[in-house]
Image (cartoon, rainbow, N blue to C red):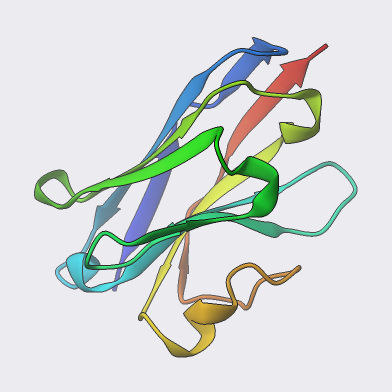
Length: 128
């Protein structure tokens, strides 16, 4: 069993930065792939960034070069560093975890598969 709790959301202006955190608890947390997802108002949930247990990362095209995902295994914490934020980045951001491979490889689908573990989300609002 894995519990996920996000924090770090807020309101920023166009071009601003934020860092999201996701603390994972549970004995098996280090063995899971983890990622960030978002759901803009009135739209479906979409994949943003993911990292596997080796540290390999991948990103949605819309955030490449602006967002960076990192994993601190010692702290069981996943981070999303967001720079050059745009109004279209406004969304509820969720952290998720599941076994690597299989469904996890489909994380960039819209909507993504229903992964095993999800956090409650943290709101990011970018104003123009």
